[in-house]
Image 1 (cartoon, rainbow, N blue to C red):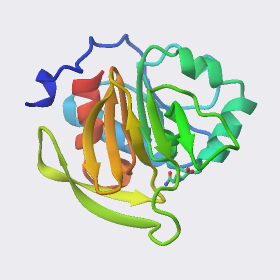
Image 2 (image 1 turned 180 degrees about the vertical axis):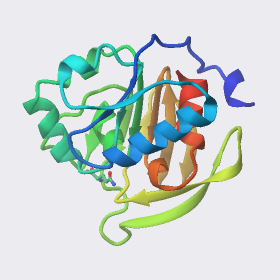
Image 3 (image 1 turned 30 degrees about the vertical axis):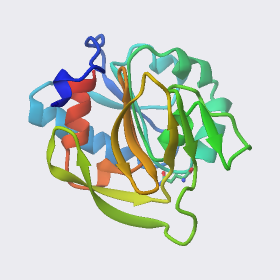
Length: 206
Ligand code: GLN
C-alpha cells in the first residue's frame, strides 16, 4: 500500500516556516536538505534555525537533528523549551539523537528524561562502540528504489505503541516510524544526498 493510502495519514498542519532546532548537531545539513526539498516541490516555505521557545508555536514543523542527545536535551531544558516542544501541534521530523529525545522511554539511559513526543521505547546506543557507523539500503513501503540510510551511533526502537506506524526495520530493531504528523528516523537522511525522506515528510506526513 503506498504511503498516502495507509491508515496513519492525518490532516495538513497550519502555516509558518519549518524550524530546525539549532542547539547542537546537524543543524545546517537539515536546513539545506529542507530548503532543497521545499524547492524541488515548489512549496515556497521558509526554513529557519530555532533557538528559543517563543519561535516554536508559529512553525509548520520542527526538525530535531542528530548530534548528542544528552547535550541537546540539556540545552532544551536550560532554554526552557521542554513544554513548548511537548505541546507543539505541528509536525516533528526527528533523526538519530532526535529520536532519542522524542521517545516516551529509553533503555540504557537514565541521565535525562526524553520528551515523550511519540509512544516508542528507544535503545539509545543500540549498536555500541563495535559498530559506530554503517550504511544500509532500507526497504521502505512506497519508496522505490530503497533508501540508502547512513547510521551513526544510531538508536533503534525496541517498542512501538499501537498508534505508531512502523516504516522500516533492520535486524536490530525498528529504524523509521510515523505517528500522526511526526516522522522519527534512526539514521541521517540530511547527509545521504537523497531528499526523499524530507520530501515525504513535507508531502505525506504534514
Ligand atoms: N546515539 C547518539 C545520542 O544518543 C546519537 C548519535 C547521532 O545523532 N548521530 O546522542
